[in-house]
Image 1 (cartoon, rainbow, N blue to C red):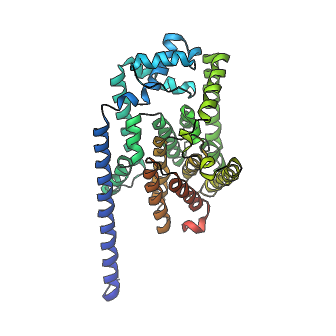
Image 2: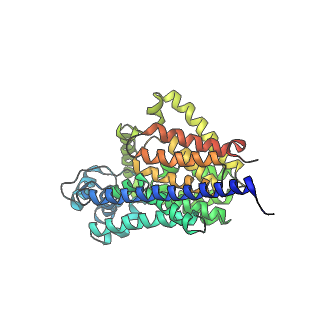
Length: 377
């Protein structure tokens, strides 16, 4: 059928708008990517002394030098940090032991080389994951790559060199494996979130709610095994020190800037909000189990960041996973707007804006949990 008159004009107009949208989006993301490159160039090398990587590197050296039972001994941690970078600010290592073991191979290299390698691998991982979720066309691949490279939390990740890339890789790989029906490998790789479990705490229960029982059991088995090995390695004294350090972190006000307990102004309101968020995440995971198997991971991440009590700006790089996954679902136009707004709010979170990102995380959960709202039938 050949289009003529108003129909042809309308079609040409729609194609032109799509073309201009693509150009505008690519230009914007290219600018944001260049902005992050400039930020990175300006930050180094004087920011190296503040890099979180020195904490993980120092913690990994404690085991071979003093024994893993001293991993959470703060006096030994201070000595280890000073041996890595004399005069640098001490921050306690309070992550589970596997977080130190992940970095252990890097201690075979000088600190500067290890930091550079970790940073490069972190950026390569983000770009590789973006390509796994992107469409087949060059425009889609370029936009997805720049959505990662131009995201402000990505700059913070490069600057601080935290452990969040391990969690991002584990969660994203889990979703991709679930999509391919490989449940046991998906659960096993998800167990790597143990290095910083709080920022992905709802992902395992979300995959269970989506009916991925084998994946959940594989995650549980691998996590329990790592937990037992950790307990044997650090002993009772190490366990008590680990608990004490985490209690002190729980009370630290700096990391509560993004907590709903702080934003809502009370633990009672936080408890109610957390219960609603958990319910939404599980509902979203369940109703999308056949439509898009990996979406349970996106719901779990959004919910985990919302209920979290201890977040840093680099942790919001995790938001790239729900952004990519929801866009890949080809949702209704208004849901695309919500996802773009989530990206923008996640970008702004790195400069201290907590309410916008919390609001958009909630909006994404609602879009995933309410079929009619997202345009599905």
